[in-house]
Length: 243
Image 1 (cartoon, helix red, strand yellow):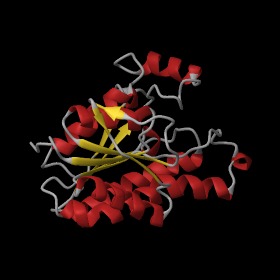
Image 2: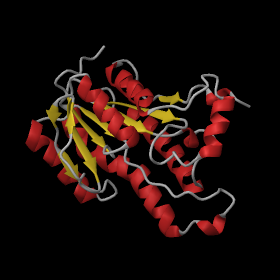
Image 3: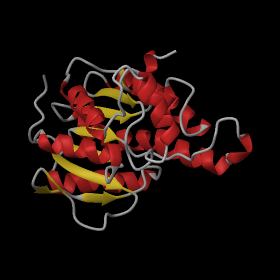
Image 4: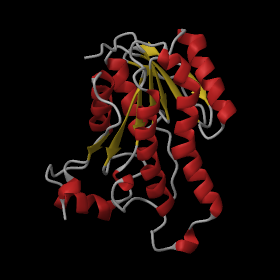
């Protein structure tokens, strides 16, 4: 099992929800964490008693990503772990084809797929030099089953799953690449989804909505699992077992 204490982790999309939970869990495990989002939080962030750097940058922008990775190196001198959690979506029923524009497709794919690619590409030389060299992409059950907040979102997460497998094959043995596919998780994005929450409560064998901590625990497990790569691990309380 890989030891993560004092390892340096970059978590994109980490100022709220799942990303924030992942950053907190990694910090509690002893990682030195760098946060990233498109905008700066109103107040400085502390995790596990430490002040942590926040690096502003849109992951869909290749040059901005280069600056973010450079900022991690300036602060810590190394990079061992990348968690791609930055995400974009638009809530549109799948049957509403007119509700989605080409701009929506470009933005959602640009963040969810190209953004993950940009981060891994920029980080790869530094991950290769690390004894850990781990990437975890945050996907979704929407990339496995035809569900999710919109068609572009579902397609983007399916693409992210394939990107995960392809990168695991391309970057091994130096860098391990895995993904976590959450089901319905209680975040600011999903708190208005009352009908969907009731459906999950009725169908999921574990009988509850997931939390960011549930996802964060699996992310840490994949970072520590040094003989696992190319896997898409579902964290959905068993919801995918329902017919």
